[in-house]
Length: 184
Image 1 (tube, rainbow, N blue to C red):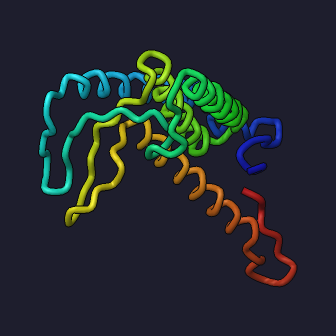
Image 2: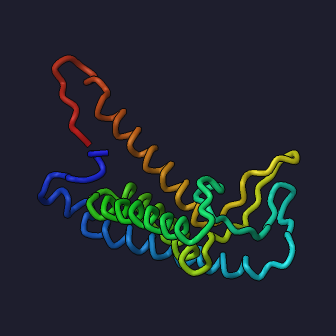
């Protein structure tokens, strides 16, 4: 992941919009937290499942574990351990977003951090994460999730896509013998 940050110092960084990258990542993280918390607050008012489409219901549930109910943390010690672990991951992701000078990975990392912090807010206030999006097809249900989970998954997918694209660009052989490809 070394391509995420540490560009050469100079006018190329400034002309690429580098000074706007950090605030954009932070603003996106805050926006994800806000939208997530508003949606979860609304979802907690649901008294019964709501069918949106043949494959999508809104169904309120509470997750005491991490993603998709893994590592269930019943009890106060488990709850605060998950808060601490998720907080550490969110902090590391925010540091990576802050260090990068490229907008795409910064925004992707901002989405991941915002999603993690949105779920932490629920765990601190409620003891569990509010989930309400129920995708299903042919009687099979995906584990119920929320907008924070979506931001995390989409952000990670974009980080991986960007890293693989950049890796492919730097590993491509020169088009003619002796020609050097500039590093992106």
